[in-house]
Structure formats: structure tokens, C-alpha cells
Amino acid sequence: MSESVGHLPHHGGPAPHEDPRPGLPRQRRGTTPQGFGRYPDFDVLEQVGHWDEVTRRVVMARIDVVPPIRFFDESEAATLGAFCDTVLAQDREPRIPVLAMVDKKLHAHEGDGYRHAGMPDDGEVWRRVARLLDAEARSLRADDFASASQGIRDTLVGRFAEGELDGDGMSVEKAWSVVMRMVLSAFYSHPWAWNEIGFGGPAYPRGYARLGAGEREHWERPPEFEVDPVKDVKERGVE
Image (cartoon, rainbow, N blue to C red):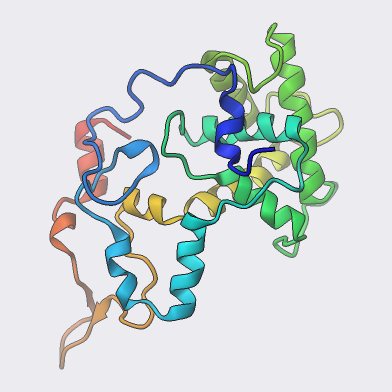
């Protein structure tokens, strides 16, 4: 099995969306998911020299080492990799290997220390979600979720998010909460996502805040961040 699960869902799967980042420029420095970003000249890795050695090793490993798939079998990995790509709109390279990062946590039994009442452990939730998505895709005459058209994938993910799928005794709403908590945690722990949102990376030991005598604490804003991203997104209609 390939060590890069990012490629598994695309064997016979749908073509990418026509334009996944309307109105956004291609990234010129650094890497972002799919190569587009709001800060095309920002690269968080230019700050590596300010990080302590332990932080640097941890962060760089997220780029340099894609964990092998060990918890999920090949069929589950294909389905769940396609789900992660769909819910995150990662339909072309470069992709953050989210499922590989989730798989690593599940294989190591690294949970959040709690479980929703009436729900199985997180790993079993993920396995059931894979079976659920494949069954729903087959009901729409696809072979499975991974090979379904982008339209079918989008529809099923939307129904999943709204709690409209049959969980076969499992709360679909709680299942969505479990998988999305892990999906988003993995995605936004990766430096490529930091480049996309303009996050400056670990603050230690340099920090971000600057204090002066009698002054209020304020945040230094690099030149790349002159535009208010929230206001700009709304004005350009690219939310």
C-alpha cells in the first residue's frame, strides 16, 4: 500500500472542480493546499530559524514524513481519504495528507480523552463512517464513495453534515462531530494550512506580542497582512 494516502481516493475517482479557489491567486512563495492562497508571498517556513529545535523537528516532520496507513485497510483508506478530500475541498495537488495523520493517531490509540455517550471508540466510528458512505454511494449507483462522481460525493457529505444519513444505530450527528474534530485538527496542524490562513507558526521563543512602557499590548502585522482577511473575503464573495 502507498504511504501517501492522498493519492488513494483518486484511482478512478472524479476530476477536480473547475476552479476550487475563485478570485484567489496562485501561491508564489511557500506551499498551500492546491497551490492557491490569500497570502501568495507568505511562507511560514521562513520563520524556522526562530523556532527552538524541538518545535522545528515536530513541525518539519509534518511535511517531510507522511505516516504509512496502518489502522485502516485499503478499502477504508480509499473511502475515508476521499471523504477527507471532499469535506476539505482538496481536489488537486498539493494536498495535506489528513487521513494519514488521523490514521497515525488511531493506530497509536491517541484519543481526546473522552467519548460521546452511546458511541463506540473513535476508531470504530471512522470504520462505520466508511461503511456508511460506501453504502450510500452504492444506493446512488456508484461502486463506492471513492469512485463516485464529485457531485455524489458532495451530496453525501452535505447530507452527512445535516445528519440525514442512516447511521444503522449510530448517531450520525455525533459521528460527524467525531470525524470532523480529527479532520480539522490534522489539517490545521500542518504548515501548508498555516500558509493558507496567514498563521505565523509557533510563537516560542520569539513570540508575537510587543509591549512598551505605558502602551497596550498589540500585535505586529507583517506587510503581507495589510488587508483584513474577514472583511476582504466578504467583499469579494469568496467565502
